[in-house]
Length: 298
Image (tube, rainbow, N blue to C red; front, top):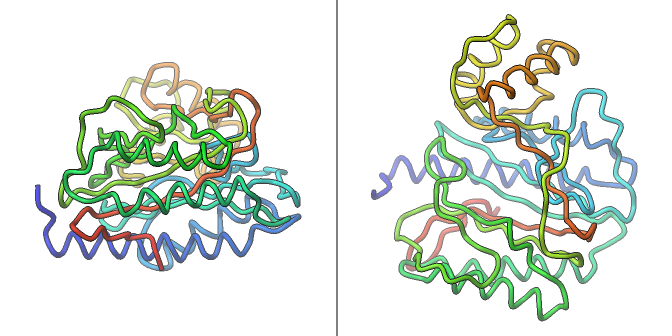
């Protein structure tokens, strides 16, 4: 399906909003900063610029690779030697941009330099007909060049309207995939570099959820969360933190437990590196063409 000019403009606007919010967040990642404040600020910035969060701000530190979004009352703050991954995305009328950076207040080291190069080496490859397997091989090759590993069970992904992970996976390691990059499609490329085992596992808790389907429920809060998941949150991932501010922490906890147990919402558990290795990540969103257009570059 060919993107219409007005759709491309919405994608570009979502990219600009995401990039500006990422720039704001990057400036806030300093020793002693509370990650709750960073998440709130970048999400507010998106709304001020005419977009909405496509998913909650992920602020994942050190061996936590992804899926941590701060909670109300969160006491986590940034330490000097932390690897702070800020992964955010905005949407405009459902057209999504997704981007991430890693900041280490003590200064960039080889792990961060490697992750940056993994992404910069892959971006020019998002042209029509490129083998997805070749992109993964290139990303993994950079990691090996630095003596690190590319996390094999985290991938980039296709992006469609109101669909953050749209089917196609962009592997970060060499595979036997027969897939190719399609002209005019939108993809998010997000390499993860680690000095650990090169794999992640799910661990509790979940701080991000997504509506799946309506189910009969007992509590008013559960009914309201189902409705919010479909409407206000547009069936995209939402933060437990957003609900805590509406319903309070205790009622939110009980409602999400009920909704998860009946598979009305999907809980995104925290993803932790299996060898407790440090993780660095960078990400951009690309519209494919003979010259790829990166929407999330300022």
